[in-house]
Amino acid sequence: MFSLSLFAQESDKQGELKYAPRVSDYFIAFGEEAFIELFGATFVNLKSPKPQGINFESIIYSITKQPYVWDKTKFLQNQIVHPYAGNLFFNAARANNLDFWTATAYTVWGAWSWENIYQNSVTSYNDLITTTAAGIITGETFHRLAYAAGAIWEPLIWLVSPVDGINRLLRGERYRHCAPEDLEVIYAAEFFTAFCAAEKFTGKTTEFLPLAEFHPYIVYQNPFGHKTKEPFDQFSLDAMLMTKFNETMGYVEIDGALYSWPFFCNIDLPASIGINFNYKVNYFDRLNYSTNAVGVFLRQQIPFDDSGKNYFWWNAEADFIFLETSKIDNVNYYNVGPEAKLEIGLETERVAVRASGEFDYVFPQNVWHNKDFIGIDFKILPWLCVGVEDLLICTEGDARNFTSVGVKVRK
Image (cartoon, rainbow, N blue to C red):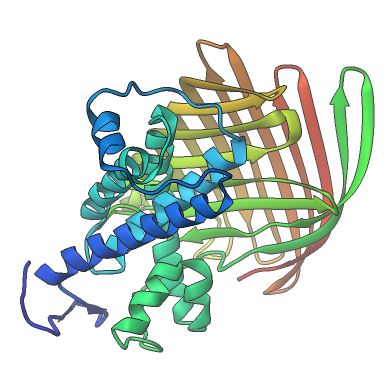
């Protein structure tokens, strides 16, 4: 729907205020994306020993003649900085009322134009893929979480998604309720602070490290019996950050439902089947790897009673990795391969248990990774728990195990 009206808007059935995109929104989003890239290019030039401006001849050469490569840039730059940049490109469109797929096109353009126009280096296959795929996943996740957070406290929008915050400020929408009225966040944010001991097995040695840990875990909308209205209106975000002064490690995993359909719901066993789109990055010394993957999932909830508070659940996923990046002994590998995940859990009024096992195999380098996790929460109050967690990361004979005990605040 297009409208030239300055204040085009419409309401949905739940009373949520929605804005129809105007023709000008497409141009504003394009301008914001260009500004983000110019800002990024300026920042890169300030850090460069030989700063260079945008050169028309090099742009033509890059587009018409320069061959693409798989670059060997630092792991964190390729797997954290590029996805975050893609998230900014994506939300330049989403914050201007454009839909998911239109924002995807903006992200593709942003990734391509950065590599060929704004950056004075050889165009990289892996940067194009990661900026686009991971940028879409992180972008939609942050966009939705920012607007949900805005219903709690306006500055949280700026923390989660600065582009959304800037656009709300420019349109005079600050402090206006923006989250859907029927929004359900199963774990609004599960903050886990703990001291943990890590065992590092390299050859036959064992190293114990005291670490501080922070573990947010968010489930956006109920995943059981879910029917997609638009892409990523159900997703989960699981992250863990562990630090010991000069050593920081952890992981981030975002798993969104691109499309999902309910079944079995007529017999009180809510279940969903669908197509998922996920991005994960693990940063653990020699166990550094990231994946962008698409696949299928099956989830089911089995209630014990009618209260809705006591149930068993499981989730199975089979994905195909279309870009996997590993860094072992300071060498980057780019691969494709299959991935599988099985997750089970138990929720009652007094205890919550979550366990998962993940496995991915990548070729042609024949590298495998697996990650096993188990967490148990004992509820002292409805929002306060004492928790125990264990995380095991393995790849090619190397492994790290983290055992944590701490306090959780959860919804």
